[in-house]
Length: 143
Image (cartoon, rainbow, N blue to C red):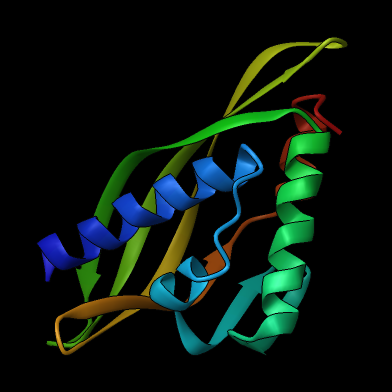
């Protein structure tokens, strides 16, 4: 399980980096995310589908990240909590770096907890739990 999930997040990190650079691959979310997913954050709980609406939302999110100066995002740590043979929680520690003319280079650490399912040797995210991204960005002067 460990190696399969680690490879998933290596692909996830790479996809994020390419998308920040404006190279959004519409095929990749189908490889990273399950057909349906849940999200929980201080904004509430949302259920969604990995469909065209989700793809368009992702394109907009990456555009917004670029607009606020997101330069890169890197995995700083990954710890797994197995649930059973097919499921785990992947606790991912990220570092995002922001660069703008009006802001010194700023690195922000944060964690996201992903629900992962492995079927036929293929790991996909089917949910995630995150903190208050807006508050964190405001705290560091990015917003």
